[in-house]
Image 1 (tube, rainbow, N blue to C red):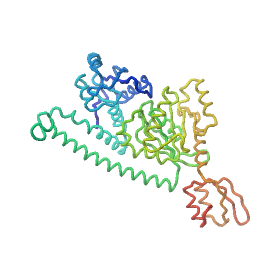
Image 2 (cartoon, one colour; image 1 turned 90 degrees about the vertical axis):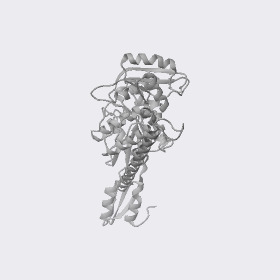
Image 3 (cartoon, rainbow, N blue to C red; image 1 turned 120 degrees about the vertical axis):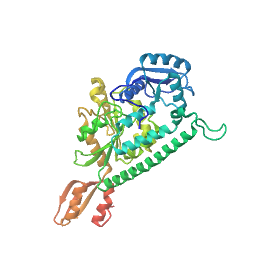
Image 4 (tube, helix red, strand yellow; image 1 turned 120 degrees about the horizontal axis):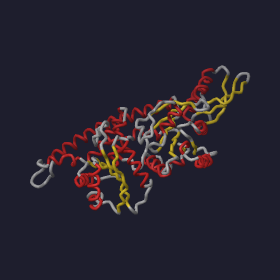
Length: 435
């Protein structure tokens, strides 16, 4: 399902506009926001013939922009041969329709643009379901735009009911039925993920989830650590379908590394809700690794956008959580002076590290930090076993980290680190509580 038609062989000419509302607090700078919007448009093979920031005092409810702006834009875009206008903001259905009438071209907003990218990049059946749900939710309120040719049809009696009402209501019901069906299928996905998570807890392997702004280098770091060959490119939303790989830490402890979809400022609500089943992997992760593009001038603002999304998922005060680690990525792209400053700022810190996913610099330090953080969460105890108890001894070596063994004539003391969830199983094997 697509909101616009893009032929990959013939690039459609498009203009990108970022409306900067005066006297409204800015997060990411206007120039960066425009560059990001152009990057998003190019991600679906649009030929950008014009881009600009338009400063406006207020948003007009009718067509978003005032008449003066529209009178200037129309001939300008016509002369450039633009077929599509991308407005990097949220448009109401009425604003979108009026802009199309006044400018005589197709108009899409930020939400539609991101939905297009997601629709193009999703590979798994789950990813496609999530994108389709977001598309349908977005389109449902905009049906009136598609049925202006049905004005001869009239629903209701007398002067009640609008043009094409019967057809619109029918189409809305069809969309509602599809939404219900997809939500049921995604609920099954959610249940499957819950079963997989419980299975991992029984094994169990700790889960390390990589999160971050889109294009921050999560997939590059994932590949550097796991050699998984996940698609990683200098593209916005290069990763949509989550990937998981088992990796070994310096102590020999094995963990599952999870790569997730990138976040972005003003991430459409439809997408947050549609991808919730996937993002719930983050909620249940043993460690959350926030990967930041430290070479980006808006890295601090991007960080806040990621924190907002995590909080919307139910993780409050994320930065204070013991399982939270912040990674300053792309050390290879900063100046030597900046690099020295960053390394100085992160020296001796457990929750703030600097790496280059491209060159591998700092990755071993990061793995050791994961090891240390997981070890800190584990109980450090000594278990005394008879030398004849081979079964429990084998279990200790398989499911715990054996630090030392003190042998005596009839028994041995095993100094171990053990995950909290495995304590009850060890108590069952010993037949006594480990108080």
